Every structure is written in C-alpha cells, then in structure tokens.
Amino acid sequence: MADRPTLTTTAGAPIPDNQNTMTAGERGPVLLQDYQLIEKLAHQNRERIPERVVHAKGWGAYGTLKITGDISKYTKAKALQPGSETPLLLRFSTVAGEQGAADAERDVRGFAIKFYTPEGNWDLVGNNTPVFFVRDPYKFPDFIHTQKRHPKTNLRSPTAMWDFWSLSPESLHQVTILMSDRGLPVAPMFMNGYGSHTYSFWNDAGERFWVKFHFKTVQGHKTLTNEEAESVVGKTRESYQEALFNTIENGEFPKWKVQVQIMPELDAEKTPYNPFDLTKVWPHADYPPIDIGELELNRNPENYFAEIEQAAFSPSNVVPGIGFSPDKMLQARVFSYADAHRYRLGTHYEALPVNAPRCPYHHYHKDGQMNFFGQKTGNVDAYYEPNSFGGAVEQPAAKEPPLKISGDADRYNHRVGNDDYSQPRALFNLFDDGQKNRLFNNIAAAMAGVPGEIIERQLAHFDKVHEDYGAGVRQALKEQHGYEANAIPVTGKTPQEAAE
Ligand code: HEM
Image: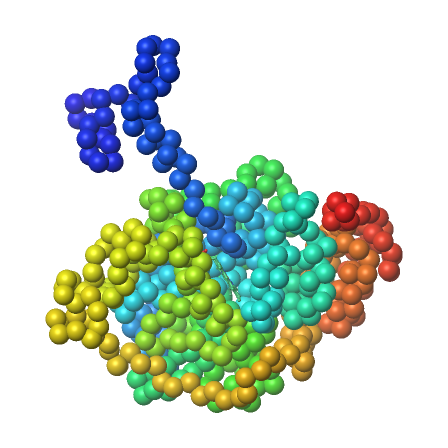
C-alpha cells in the first residue's frame, strides 16, 4: 500500500475510511456530519448532463488531416495549405436515438469534425449523406419531432415520419438515401462523410468561391441489411463503439480521402438548381471533386465523457479562408449549436480541454459559472476593449470579403419552383436491381402501421421520381403487409390511434 497515492477529499485532505459510514452506534443511524458520504451521493446525483437533443448516441476519436493537394488559389486557410497537418477530433453519431440506443439502427449518421487549426478551431459538422430532409430551418424542429417519441405512447411513430415526409417532398432525396443500403453502415469507418452544406472559400485576393466538402471512406462501404442489423443488435447494442475503439486500439487507423467541389461565386446565379439548397447535390460532372488530402483517425480518447460527451461542435466555428453561404439551414445552425452548448455544457463550454483551441486565444468574456480560466488577455487591467493596457486587439487581415446579397425581406415559399424529383431519380437510376429491391423492402418495412392515406400520398411522390420506384414499393407493401391501394394496412391501428 505504501506506493499508492492517498485518497483525499476534493479539497485535498486525506480520507481515513472509504468503506464505513459514520454512525451513532454500530447499527446506525447515520450522522449528518459524515460529509464524505453526502459528498459522494451528491456528486453521483450530478453525473448526468442533458444529452444532445439530437445525435445523442455517438462514438469518437482523434486524428490528423494531411493536405497533399494545392487549393491555395481558393482559400487562405492555413489548415488547407499543401503539406499542412492538423490535429482533429471526429464524433460520429445517429440522429434520433437516445444515448442508450443500439448502434446498428437505420438512421442518418453524424460526421462532426473539430480541426484544431493554428488560426482557431474549424468545425465541420456534417453527416454521412450529402443532402438533408428539409431545406428551411423553420421545419427542422417539426422534422425532429417526427423522429422522436410520441408524447402519449412514448414510442417512435412511423405514422408521424411518413406523414411529415409525404407532406414535405423536399425530403425525397434524403429518404431515398436513408432507406437504401447506405442508410445502415456496418461501422463508422465504412461510410463517407459530407459537409453537406455549401460553404465559402476565400483567398488572399478577396475572391470568394462556393465549396462542398467530401470525406470518402478508404475502407470501402460496408452496410447491413435490416435482417443482419437485427442479429447484430441481438448480440450487442454497441457495435460501432466496439468496432471504432478496437480498430484504433489495434493500430489499424481508419482513413478517408478528402475532396472538395468548387464553384466560382458567380456560377451560383446560373445553375438550374439552387446551389444553396441542402436537399440538392452539385452534379460531379459540372463540379468534379478535387482530391486534397487524407483524414486519419489514430487515437482513442482517454475519457469518453470528458472528450466525446463534452465535445461541442458548431458550424459557427470557421477560420480565415472559410466562410458561410446563403444556405438558410446553415445560417440557422450557425446560431443553434452554441446555444445548445451553453444549455448542455454551460457558459464556458469552449474552455473545456476538448473544445479549447490549440493556438493562443484571447477574448474579453468575463466571469460566469465555472470560470476557471481568468482573463485570457493575461493583463488584469485589460478586461474591456479598447484599452490602454496592451490587451488583445482585432486583426483586420482576418476580414472576410463582402458577400453580395439583395432582395426584399419576406417569407418565400420554398416549395414553389423547386424540383424535388430529378435528383432522387438520378440516384434511383444508379441502383442495380438488388439495391432497388432492398430499397423497396426497407421502405415497406418502415411503413408498418401507417394509415393508407399517408402511404398513398408518399407513393404518389415515389411515382413522380420513377414509375418503377412507386411500383416496387407497392409490391413490397403487398408482400410484407398484404397492403392494397388505399386499404387500411393489415397491421391495424397505429400506436397513436390505439392510444387515443
Ligand atoms: C447536433 C441543431 C441540421 C449535423 C445538433 C444539435 C443541435 C442541432 C441543437 C445538438 C448539439 C449539442 O448539443 O451538442 C440543428 C439545426 C439544424 C440542424 C437547428 C437545421 C436547421 C443539421 C444538418 C446536419 C447536422 C443539416 C448535417 C449536415 C449534426 C451533427 C450533430 C448535430 C453531426 C452532432 C454533433 C456532435 O457530434 O456533437 N444539431 N441541426 N445537423 N447536428 Fe444538427
């Protein structure tokens, strides 16, 4: 025992007994003055923090971004210059499930990266899909409500999901990806990542370019069928955590090829689609992906809670040379994440070691709960700005070039004049017969218990994508549920109806 450290209180005093509560007599009762007992119970009561409102279940690791290509004519970002190596944290996640959800569930996967660059943290908070279900952030909370539990039954509701999707045709592209093979990867290293939104690059000359980021798995795509996933979940609910942790622990470091698509600023006025619409991809033929380097994961966190649960990613974290775009969804996200972190982690979430920049940083935020860092300016007399005491000052070289915008303030109907069918059709046409059949069957399985009128409304959208799409889902519905057009499904009442 001599070489073991002494157990202490959090105040540093030695603890003489960590086995027996202090009582009045051998049988009790317990004395209120047993402060250490109270301390242990009180700490335990505070071990949980709110889980993320979405993307609660996640798996993460550290790694490196190595840039080999030369895109210096598009961006001045130091982390993207040829030869640069940037440390990073990557957290993967599912969207809908709670923290205890099984990993092998059909869902979109989060692909959130924090690059610790020499100019500050750059967070690229993307998914494993290049598009999203909605294009207007006004609809994001509604969409998420359909993915979460019904208020009365406390069950996930396929009726809510298909009701919303069938009333929101902009979701077709993402729904097709979600229900395809890509909607259920075997493990994080067998899927791509996408920045999804259109972002900006800007260079030293003040020129702006639009950019999309892609991370292509070097391990190749591996996916599970619904049946395979059932057997995985029957054996372990933690298949992603096990795969990612053990792979890295064994020294087999997963890698992704990093690519960008670049669009000159003025092209945005010419494309037949809105390049800032998150439900659309940019055709590769028009804007070919350019290889710029490799992302590797090579280190597991030491403490899951401190480094993965407390990780706070935000699309608002950009660095000189990288900027936003008019994408409405992106702009809402620029606000939403820091707000979520202040609620989930506290005012000074960015001072936590996993979130703190690895470059010098100086700001004038002051005081507040859990401020353990004092004044970062390093000068007690410079706690406001401007000041005469040598405090940190702004850096005009970091100024982004002006963004050209115009237009009347209004609420523009985002469903008017938007083609929601061509891009899902192009994707559908890429699938071979086996992929199409699995798509039809996955959709039919996900529609169990959904009322006929909602199913018919959704089938009409599939018909508009491709007649084979609608026909294939109809056939699968018939085979799985005995469903005939407009019939109430054989599975009977939805959980909501049963509860009402
Ligand atoms: C997590 C909001 C759309 C990817 C979150 C969180 C919020 C949020 C509040 C929880 C943050 C936390 O507590 O740490 C929104 C809003 C959106 C939106 C308001 C649309 C208006 C998107 C899109 C993507 C995305 C389009 C991907 C392209 C993610 C990821 C996470 C996340 C990956 C988990 C980050 C992590 O690992 O900590 N989102 N989101 N979200 N979101 Fe979104």
